[in-house]
Length: 279
Image (cartoon, rainbow, N blue to C red; front, top):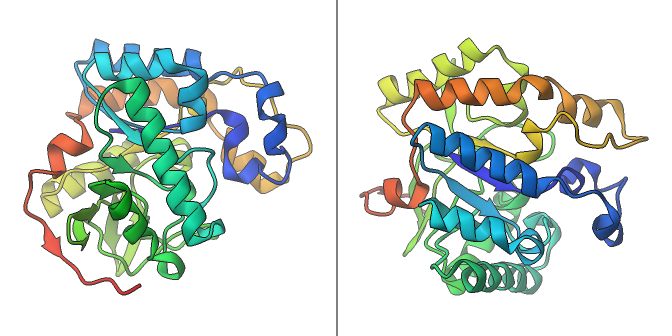
């Protein structure tokens, strides 16, 4: 179980409508939402990995400390939710180093994992893995092996693999059907599709592929009361708000129907395939 800790106004789809210098003036909802998620996990005895923005950690250190205190994994989502594909190699290295240092200072634990905003590592910026290795990360969960208009690397391996010596890539979950990878790991797809279908796909990965499923969501997805962003295009509006009022109940079912754990504890002590990836 993984949570990308960012607020509603920081999502990539809203970048054309909300300037970064407006962020501090926006109503922040992430603190309340993360505390609710932590309560849900505690109620069901589940553990998770929280890929957290450095920007959020600086402003809400108490949620970082609670994540660690309750036995969850603290991981990095970069500093300011800039897509890896939009950054130069030096700027990306600076971003992932800065976020790691902030999180470790506040949380008091080693940060081993990283997830790129909007799964923005792909064929055009595989040098990002060298930066992650240089920054001291041990794994990434930044590639989504599907075809999508904003991200995706459909030919990438579906399950954890060694992308550099000392660095794993652990993709979010897809189900292989008719020579195509179907998204099966959360986000907007989980809100859009019937719960029973999502549950079936995750179960097929567990039972058919004999692999752990990687599920992800965002704190703003359980918050139907969040301020509505005006003037956004119809596609972004639909993707962001579809079935947002049903998300918390679906998550409660999901936490009951499957057993969930931390990424580091499940994958870092496992032997995985080594797949050559060229920069």
